[in-house]
Amino acid sequence: MAILVTGGLGYIGSHTAVELLSEGRDIVVIDDLSNSSALAADRIREITGKSFPFIEARLQDEETLNKLFSDYDIEAVIHFAGSKAVGESVKNPIKYYDNNIGSSLSLCRAMLKAGCKNIIFSSSATVYGSNNPSPYREDMPAGGCTNPYGETKLIIEQLLGDIVKSNPGFNATLLRYFNPIGAHPSGLIGEDPRGIPNNLLPYIAKVAVGQLPCLGVFGNDYQTPDGTGVRDYIHVVDLAKGHTAALNNMDGLKIYNLGTGKGYSVLEVLKAFEKACGKALPYEIKPRREGDLDAYWSDPGKAERELGWRAQKTLYDMCLDTWRWQKANPKGYEG
Ligand code: WQD
Figure (cartoon, helix red, strand yellow):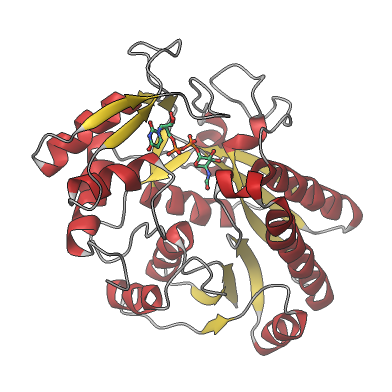
């Protein structure tokens, strides 16, 4: 019996693959390499000393997918594959509806055909929209997303909810991630965005390694203690462990936040990173970024109560591990 990891060579997928293999599980990875590198597979093998099959394909390639389900005995799927750049999703919504929803439909069809009845889905705090007060709890109404990327996550959540209703014995766990950062402590795998990073930590890391001149801080007039945006940053290894905990507790439709429950501002993150890399980093206050909320963070209590999972690592750990990965791989996997 194996776990199928879609998007298993991407940022969160690769860290989850490591945790699964380290726990002694067999995995099969499918990834189209559209935003990942095949070298991540070698690194996962290097960290764990274990090997696994890797299939390079899109999920919409249903022939390959059906063959995969007949070649391997898949007990559960962890579904990471998808496009994730918020700004790009506003400019090119069709790509997002096609890649994210189209691929999830193909995957679910193949699962039902093969009789595979367990899926964990990589969802996002973005599904809480802009009207809920923090801390976000799973029983708050989802919706009101400000971009197509978020809408696709919400639609896939609904799709899985409907499949659970219509298929007795089908289990779907929706994991709503807050802001994953950090890297494996080995420095062998980490986040490797293509081009100029959109997200805060990869941007800071590239300033620290000298590839970008200065961090732009998007707004310092928010209703937060220092005026900069506040988010719930979570170490990607803690996040990965949330998936293995969820795998052991599947039962119908379940929804869990994966966050730390603590918010940090952009300037607090910058200071923690400066401490981790041992140097001051230049920054400049810029206008607010369209669509950004001032502050949000999770209530992670449900995952702790029901899954026995809780994030362990500090913001400093997250920065130290990001820095170790960035220093050792200044140009990412291909560099
Ligand atoms: C964090 C904070 C910015 C960059 C997005 C998606 C979410 C999830 C993760 C993933 C904000 C500020 C950022 C910069 C800055 N999606 N910032 N300068 O926007 O919270 O979440 O990514 O796949 O669904 O919405 O993350 O890292 O972009 O921003 O000042 O150069 O850092 O304004 O306050 P965000 P982020």
